[in-house]
Image (cartoon, rainbow, N blue to C red):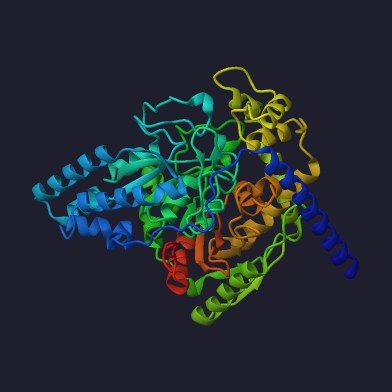
Length: 530
């Protein structure tokens, strides 16, 4: 045991040393960005920004506040904070105010009463932000790729259409990582997005613009997508709630890049929001005609559930170990569950989790049922022209001439190392893990699992700790529903949190847990407050 601990400590030391050298080289070669150190978001002054979407919709229906007032409050907040966070890449403020005026007129003329409006238009008059990788008619549709500059969506993605049909008013689209395949939201089309709690840190990705503007109280509800943690990491880093549903229920159509290979088995679109009570109604709307599959109307008694906790992945040598403050907060959740609900939370261990990255990487590369492999990342980088040559792009980047980020270039280089035949050992590890986790959770089990080894890293640091995302990515490959829940702020004033996982199609369990954790730990915090 002592020898293994020594070996692990040596690996961590070497990893940090290499990280330090590479990061120094990166800083020397990369272009300078404005210094944000010491700057802080202004505190919230409008009380409407402290109200959930569910309650705002109720107030609008009851004429306690107008939709115009609510939309104007969020426009003002975006104009106040976006110069700090660079989260909203294109707004539609004038159109949103016109739509809000129409909403207020509709409410004045409605004769069927509040219940009719609630049933037909549950989000009537509530502002909404949308990840820019979703098709949203009339808005940019670039996913942060320079060659797609000027591309405008001609249709709405189904999830956007459903939310608009429920009465929500989109106010803008938000930044992503280049081609949505990295956990820092940075590209050479829209720039880099900052974390509202510390502008020198990342908001996560690829739904980082959503996470940032929601955390900054520039939006109350938003739409994200997740194939490796792209909802959950931004929600974790920005102290908000997010849900990655069981895949195959919420439509994934009309996104860029499109799903190829077997990606549709792992991707999920879901809600992101500051208040836990908004998760369920948003998910129900986004699922459309398939919403019944989630059993969202089923009552949940937390005292009757079985609870499990896994404090870390068992020690993947290329990722950082989970920090003490994140392990401590997960332990506090366990203690509160046992004290409040009278349940016993069992700590479990799955050795296969240490292969999380290899499992995710292998399954993301598998061909579809017709034997067609996923579209190459280098092809997507080069569209609508020829595929990029990764080594050439790396040389261009070193000369400051590349249109692509170092993250995208690195991913295209990594793709060159893929082998055509997957490792039988890794396939075996995944199948064993899948069987064990499915059996453990059943229809009444809930699992607590870290969201990330560390709180929000500083800008560009993920380039040198690229495997830390595997805590979220493995849940995609297992096909399980998971809710990211904030748990207050840590010693550096940065959000803490964890993932709450349940069995397939048991999304209602994790959503109920989100309500409990918000009540117990306080939920989202104003990043501008003292």
